[in-house]
Amino acid sequence: MRDRSVFWLPTLYAFGLALVLCVWVGGSLLTDFFVVPEGFRTLPRDDAIAFGRRIFERWNFIECFLGALGILFAFGMGRAGWGTARRHWTATGLLAGMTVLSMAFLMVLTPLIIGKVEILIENGIEFSDLSQMPPEREALRTVHSIYMILDALKILFGFTALWLYANRRERARVRHSAPAH
Image 1 (cartoon, rainbow, N blue to C red):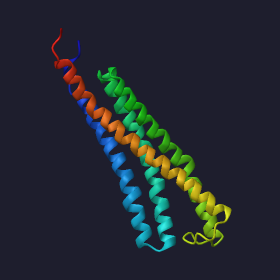
Image 2 (cartoon, helix red, strand yellow; image 1 turned 30 degrees about the horizontal axis):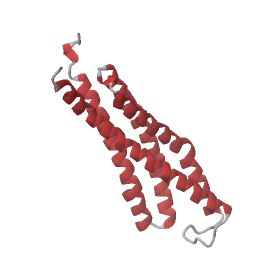
Image 3 (cartoon, helix red, strand yellow; image 1 turned 135 degrees about the horizontal axis):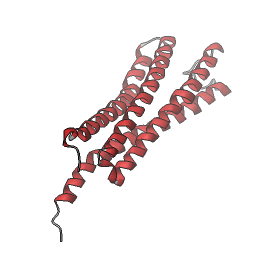
Image 4 (cartoon, rainbow, N blue to C red; image 1 turned 90 degrees about the vertical axis):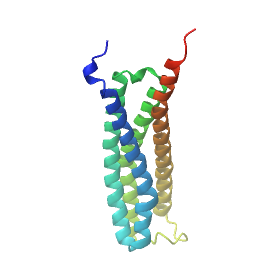
């Protein structure tokens, strides 16, 4: 028998997890498609590079924090009785995948991109001139492409996890309300 004094706890976990995923996915979309591109459109090149660097370093750290918080909420939901459905654990796995990707961004890809950009700046290579394609410029393009693909995958994981968590309760209610034969 469940303790009725904490009947609201599963709902609190679900709300917290939904909030974490919405902030995470929304923040990623906002950062990728509005904040950083607008900085590169409106600021001088060197200022835009410094701005983009600060934004991504900080956002990657925030993403790792959101991932840890989201996993705590997801496990709380599982312990509160929502963990019996396969879709809950699939969504939790997607959340863990998002967290691993964010850790890779924080510890590997963002520092690698920043390092390549600093080398190009030191060598006086213009970023927008594609005719200048030294190995550092090509490496920057490759690493940046990997980052973008993995970031799109992370956002897709986030939308999928939100959908799975949101539909889990509805389906459980329908399943329990069906007449027994």
